[in-house]
Image (cartoon, rainbow, N blue to C red; front, side, top):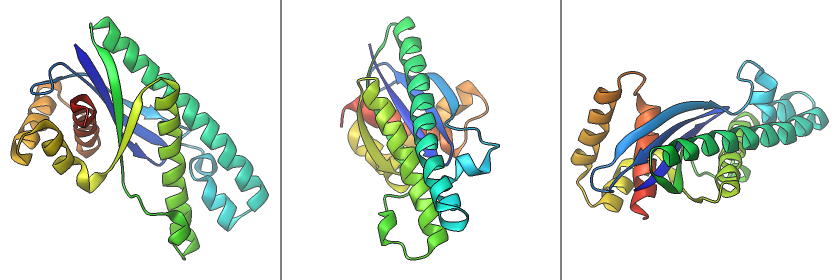
Length: 194
């Protein structure tokens, strides 16, 4: 049986869902929230704010450290999910990430907004690098495209996709909110091999 990993990437963390089984009717094998950095360390979590608002040299050092830490933590989490899949008799074939935006940070004029966009890009790239280190092909979806992309990839109507994600949440119990649903949609897209 094949499996896939979906990750909803946020500033400082990602929510991951591992789906396995046939594309038409997969099941959730695991879900996990992955801290990519120390979430209590505001500077490490948002290093581009340090670059733009405090100390550029120190901030760029933090950017490198944050990227390295986030990549290492995401790699560890993806490998653990791959091991869980293997133990359940599944082979992970790919990963798909869901991000909030695909805007090029360089196009943003306001320094504070640009800092947020740069941080979003940093975490996205760290998780993409982690998937690559784990030998997984990786696709990126913008959050608003996740449901229609899953519907096209799986060949079902959006209402059927939504019903399936709701059913997974009921079967698993909390937490099963927007982050988990987005990650599950991403995993389904990856499982379908779109």
